[in-house]
Image (cartoon, rainbow, N blue to C red; front, side):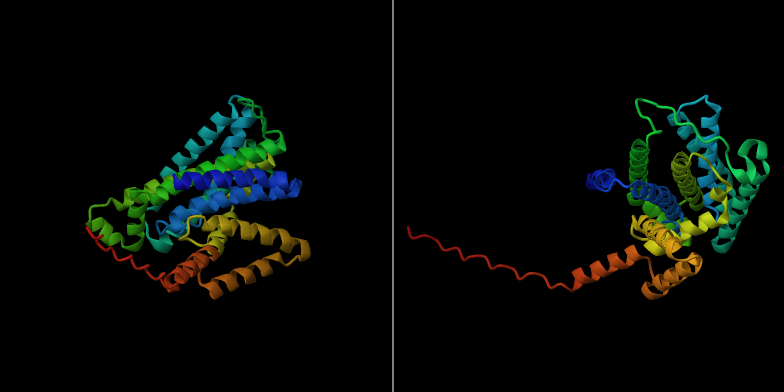
Length: 329
């Protein structure tokens, strides 16, 4: 109930911001934060929760965007059906790839995920008749109204993206706090002991791999709706690198840390590119300062600092109870 209340308050805040500050640039900035924040959150299911560092997570971001865009361009399905098909198709793709990847450990796992991502990226580039090649999906993505919702209107599209974002966060929060989530933490910390206790480590890793891929596809769908297209950059290794940067900036152990990292990275991208052409250098310096100075993400550092403050605050002295005396008979 507490998580549900926080989610409702967060959704109300997201919906209220464009009303208080009606500039279109703020709304567009928030949609970028929503899409890439959801991508980073899905990747943190692997990195922070399970200890699996994937360099190829953007493959599922691109898969969701392209499958959704192609289905909408066909004109045969509605937006909700196209979203379900895109998420289901991406989950199936993650199941096939994950069945191979999760059997490997550490750096071998990381590099084979990168290899699969580059394979998918090459398919996007070479299958020009279907994907448009390096030009992306041509002709835009239709947004026909459904259930009285018109995503062709900018404010409605933003509200729709915010609702999807909060719902996905609720799903991931339940996984984070569930027995399944604590089993994944045990696998992260000591896989040998987890296996000794009877946990099917491969099956558990595969399950979270598929869920992370499905959540990444939702981020891709939001981005495809926003830009009215899908582009090869969605599946390039730099997109996975940005997701990892967001996790490094925000933190891995606080649930909403990757969202904070996405906000910081998009904020830096926005302002750095305005004032200098050397945005890569500036971003690299900022990330180095945070990683080397704080030695953790911003959200992780803030949570640890608050915990230390609570530990150092002395407890309030107990109030002595009044002495009770018997009344004279």
